[in-house]
Length: 176
Image (cartoon, rainbow, N blue to C red; front, top):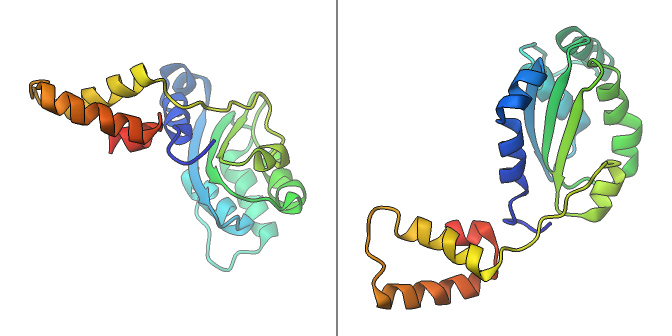
């Protein structure tokens, strides 16, 4: 879904869920953004798993280190804000590295704006988030706007409802 719809927020809620905490031996979060640099992603994952690596480590050495720090631990990895539309980078480079480690039941969650990216990442059970209804938009906005005990004055409510309409059900726009 589009930026601000709540993909990262939903992923954070799952990531921080108590059952997820208990189920996985290792949890890691990497924000990918527009640079799908396989080496940088693997280095980040190694560091997140409490390992160390160096700037000039080869991909072979990184694979070995990945195996050392993750081993057969059941892991939960979030790759947030993936933009990569080059199937080869995922299929031939990163996926084999990630699939060579971890115990049964390990999970990789990716957040992305594009259905094409979700398709490349072979997302199972893809979730597409929808815009908020007018009622939910108003509830989110008013909880933020009137959170410090401010009274819902008629004039402020009128202005607030206009703002809510302009935000078009986009949660991030409503919160900011």
